Length: 452
Image 1 (tube, rainbow, N blue to C red):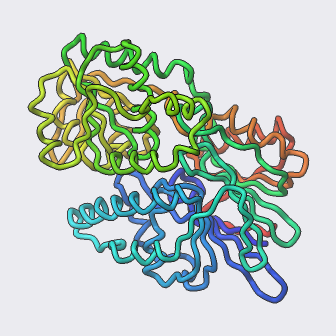
Image 2 (image 1 turned 180 degrees about the vertical axis):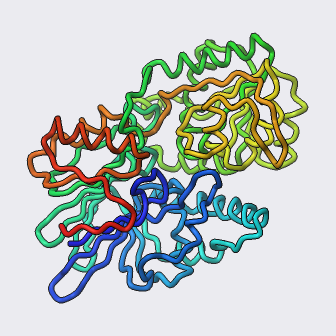
């Protein structure tokens, strides 16, 4: 087999791995993920470069989960001539269609603003979905003689790590691994025996603090903002993070632990994704399933408002604080959160609550790093509100959990490829895998090839 890294190497986003295997007298070409490169913009300029391979020659694409940095270039792949088959879990397929349509909307706005070409359009997404099939966890796929199997990664609903077997060797692609215990979904499954592993390292250099206290920290943030008479503004990823917050808020409201204030979910995408969540309740963890059987709607509570239309979104401004506004996008790349940040960042009574990863160059990262002034819609905005981070809501495994996950496979592992992290994070994880597990590690660079 030959493995080439075309994304997710030296960066967190733009995940794209290319695996070639010899089966009898034919060469099978399989891609794992095909994600959007993100940074200061929703889409970086690298996304507009031609693919470094011929999309028409790709036989299969296997998708780990529905985040845009793992699926965002699939419509472009189809536009460039890909006519193979795409596989993921059924939930990932359902989520991905909504995520890609939302992505296309943001891309079109960005293209118009920068007078750039369109990366793809809705027709390309439609063509893609006709090639995409949802499968169950642990269903064995026969890809022209190459075997593939999906395991629950515990990252977001429907997420998977993938085991591929060919030429007598097995390789596991971690995708993004979950930060268990998660509020709603099941815990990450154990890694099967493998000869090679491609492992993410987004938080490979740190330990998530106070994971068991995240609900208390959310409670404190709400109480502090209510006491000061301000607005709690939460930039949240529409997929998983918003649903996690809804679950925690449901517990706080029903337990009488926070004051009665209106809570707004101001994200059409998050609203539609939440409906799909309800379709896949059988994949929730046992504790949450028991709550649902007991009659608790875990994603709804008194005082919650879903603002789907633009008019409903604007009407939030008419509601006097205190109030809570949760909106996308999670790194403040775009979306309705920008309008709320423009309005409330200058307010010393309000608070911006950061509950997710903020990529280098993003507006969210600038605010997290303490910027006193930022630019939103071309205007300079003073930052006078409080900024608070709750790291326990991360959907990514931290360094101890990454090492714990890979440990059972250490005896058979010949090499581990450390990917999907900033330089320091990847180096830290690679070093601890070498030192603690005595397994050879590589931190691949873009375009680097390896013979397995």
